[in-house]
Structures are given as C-alpha cells and as structure tokens.
Image 1 (cartoon, rainbow, N blue to C red):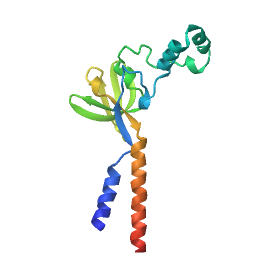
Image 2: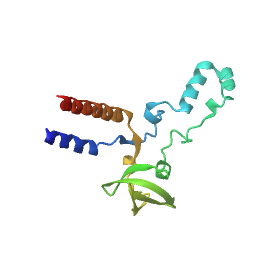
Image 3: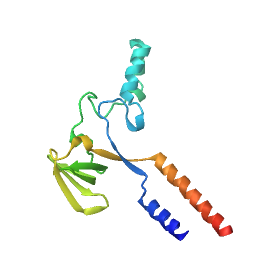
Image 4: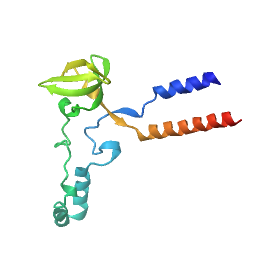
Amino acid sequence: MKKYLYLLTISFSLISCYTYRIKSETDGAGKDGVESPVNSKEQEEKRLGSKQASLKSKTPQSSKTNKNKNPGQPMSIQEKLEANKYFKIEVGGKPYKIQVDKWESDTLVAHVIHKPKKILKFHKNQINQSTVAERRFSQPTADIITVVAYAAVGVGIWALVK
C-alpha cells in the first residue's frame, strides 16, 4: 500500500495544468476555438445587410480588432513571441521551454523557465517557426487532477476508518 501511495505522490508531482499549443495563424478561431470578433462581424454583415451593419459598426463591441491586422498573412516570429510569456520553441533540433524577456533587433533574449540566470539568445532565423507553442492553462487537465485528488483523499479517509 505504501508503494502505491509513493507512486501516486510522484505522479502528481509530475503533472501540470499547463499545456503548450501551437498558435493557429490562418483559421478564424482564436483562443480555445472561439471565433475572433473580426470574423463574427463579417458574418453579421453578410446576414444583416449593409444598412444594419453600418449601425452595428458604431457600437464599441464590434469595433474591436484582431491583433493580426491581416488574417491571411502569416505572423512573424517577433509577433508570435511576446515579452513576459512562456513558450516552447525548437532551435537546431533541441526543444527549449522559455520565458521571453525582449527582442533586441533580430535577436530573441529569453531565459529558461524558473531559471532567470540562464539567459538564452537566439537569432530569429534559428528558431523553427512551425514549432512555436504558447503555454496555456488547461481547464480539463485541472479538473481531472482535482477529481483524482478528491478520490485519493476519500480512499485515504476510508482506509483510516476501516
């Protein structure tokens, strides 16, 4: 029984609620598959007609714009890697989990996550752009961890009572 308890404790310490997902450039879906305000506005204009759409465009909600001004154009690596965010990148076939500090001209200055003294510098041409993944919180993973933790506490209490 102790062996299983240790195994469960070790496996919980290795689980993270964060996942790395590659940003999609060409589709209209934003975070978590939700449509961007620009695409929903275009669809409304087609449905409602030009007269009603012109009235609607004056409201603050529909005046929101997407960060990427040209949705058909691919994002540059400097737009993808924003300062103070966490990313997983691949440079020369080696993966790195980094926190972006800043861009100095064409050079990315970053440090390894949770190791601020280990500074990394990469030229923008060294970074494999197709594998740039942003770290995001995963609610389903967090829910699974919570349910498993509650079940483990319940089993522990049941074992103590028995």
